[in-house]
Image (cartoon, rainbow, N blue to C red; front, side, top):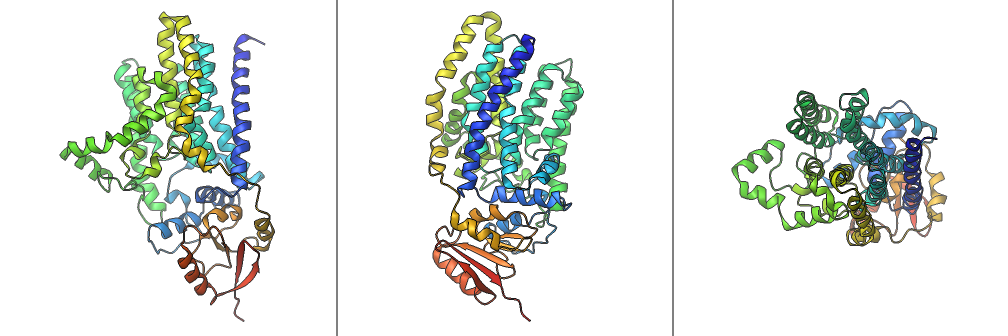
Length: 476
């Protein structure tokens, strides 16, 4: 076996070791009932797709009906692509059909996120800094943003870690090769907002590369065009709400539409500065950058990594800056390719010194992770076995029957065409399953009122110390 193949094998083994560890924890989180509606959304859509009902989903719309105060009808053929556009999911329908279970999505997500790290080593090997590449791979795999993404249910956005890593690698080594075009298309198909970061990256590349300037500009224009076609035409057409509901990002001060944001930023530069350069944002970016601090010396890639956080930066919601979900997934590949590019420059003049710096970065990683990862650690501190009382109820809910249930229970019932967040569609559903202990998102008084309504249309079919299962009364 050649040295080239041995290095590639080492990179794959490292990725698989991290995958085994992360996937074990991710599955434990699922079985302990700590996943929420996002995993339910994608699992229901994938189950329906595996039966020929392409990307049909009702649960996601029930979530938005509840949280958004919307009271629209939810047809059974509602498309999940009316919320976010994730055509990349089509690739995984055959796998999901083999094992139609949410754990399939969790495993695919974790595997691809970890596998994305091998591109760091491959690029380092081409630049003759293989040892630094292996250090970079370990840093990539250890970054809290990657771990929080793979531990936080399933999100198509997290797939960007693999596909965008591949795109950066191929555009760096053979920009006009067919593999670059494939990874470019796949990266755009992950989610509409990924195309914005790809746009900026390609645009900056065009500014610094005269030879391929036209080519990079074509990629940039394609990316931004795809974004606006997705958000202004495709998603509104497929959505029950006939709009792209994420255009106004969680309390964004700049405005309620892309046009308003651009106009208000130009008219009021002080507001723009206040939003983007707030103390909270600077702290947020700094904490994410700390484990890859040398990335700042590679501005093209580093600017793209920061730009990938755009939704979080303009939002007033602390949730998007919590660093305990998936919002920073795209940050990881850009920041570590920036890190590697910095060491490539240093290595050309100071080979041994660059290796020492890389190892120093690795040894300081633990302290950085401890500072960044508090929210993530707290979130999953109480992983426990699968609830036996829930396990005895699951078979009692008839297959394919409609069900309205609470967020944390929904993920265990995704193999059905009609699934809703309680109390949405509760009086119309065949079954209603409620927890006596974890009643979120309702308050105790609200749940009691909903149960009173339910008693007029449903019978209590089964009860144990933790759960109530209601079945709709069939009138003769």
